[in-house]
Image (cartoon, rainbow, N blue to C red; front, side):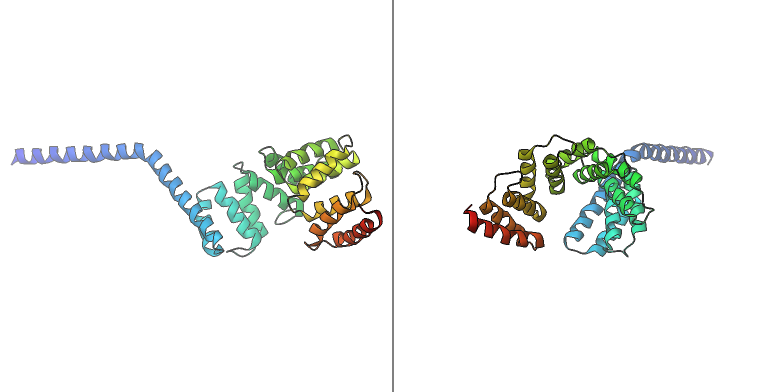
Length: 272
């Protein structure tokens, strides 16, 4: 009987030790395994959320963004911020949007830094501050965000949140313009036309206006139309002016519609 009890104790001890070591072994593995599972789940949340966005089912998308955001995922926090900004799938709230943008921005997420900067710029959901806006634009711009680069250029050009500096403005306009940002291309063209922060160079001005115009940007098409119509910084060419005015006018640009009539009359008078 004693031997049986001893055997039972030994067996139970081995079972206990086996369970203990198994638990310890699992625990040592689980750090990486749990992280992998967590990231996999977050990735699934994000993929499904973006799928719902594509279907314009923002309610379900917002729920999934929330689940991923609760796990500290910056991309989800940013996208949930957009949902709150636009009132898509959730009640519109700039305050909640700012909260989400801040969480993502603190993790260095450039798009969230830019959006938070816009909130500071406009005073949406937070006290308006050009200084804070410029700081956030700078952070995102340094990561290559074209919209942030353009807006940082605006800050330097107007002296909003930073000392006015046309040279610095041109620097950031150029970086954004090279990425195809049409707003920055127009601003850079303006700087070259007027010698703001850079030596005046009409050929460069026309180049940047044209690049924006060729993207279908009505403002640039209208500007280019006036350049050719007046012969201000490029040889007068009313046929070319008509071409660009017409493209802008077709988009409903009132100034282009007026310019189109002027260019047509010029074409009749001068023949070019």
